[in-house]
Length: 297
Image (cartoon, rainbow, N blue to C red):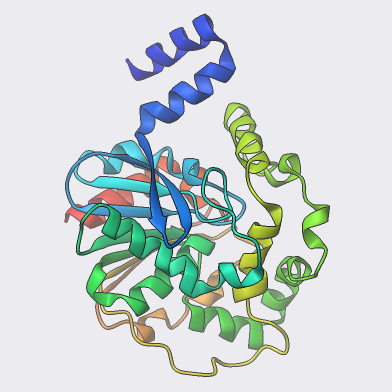
């Protein structure tokens, strides 16, 4: 029924109107205040709160396949991280430090008058999710991480795994002063396989700040010379589900080793041999079912 309605809208109003219609089919749009920065979100469903955090280069729409599944039992909130799409885009590297990104998630939970939430993150969203769980364990009911090793695992691989260092050259490039001038919306959306979805990504990236996107790397990504963490990170206090597409070349699966050493509760690890970095799209149905079943078991 949903697909039929969208097709009728596309015929009557044109495909650009279809894109807007589909976005609103997925949920209600709104904004939450994080200090002076407005964070755009899309929400649907009722029940315990689940916050979905995208990575680079992406926006809330990356969760389009997971949202209807999770909304059957939860209130889901998919956010645009600061700098992306319809969220605020403050200038300056300092406005993209991890504490600011974590504060955006805290503000979102408070916006919905909740004491805690399930935090789901992919890529940079995964980094924010790990950091949020460390900073606010009492607000983190459960943690779901897609294709992003624990920060300790990432630093270890950069320090000791030559292949990971080589594959992270893109991140070092992004840390260069004029790197944003080399980006375009079309190039950033090239990874999106679905043609209609890719067009939506191009529009979203044109609304975004390339400088802001790369400020995540400038403010937070480890810099050479790579070494062990300067201070011991607090252990994660809640149950953790990790899903990792093994074809990911940017974040090698070896970074998953020893994750259990940094957790206080149980770890469920799911690897998908044929999926790449954007595992939530490469294996959308499987990922949706894994998250839903884990959260409702």
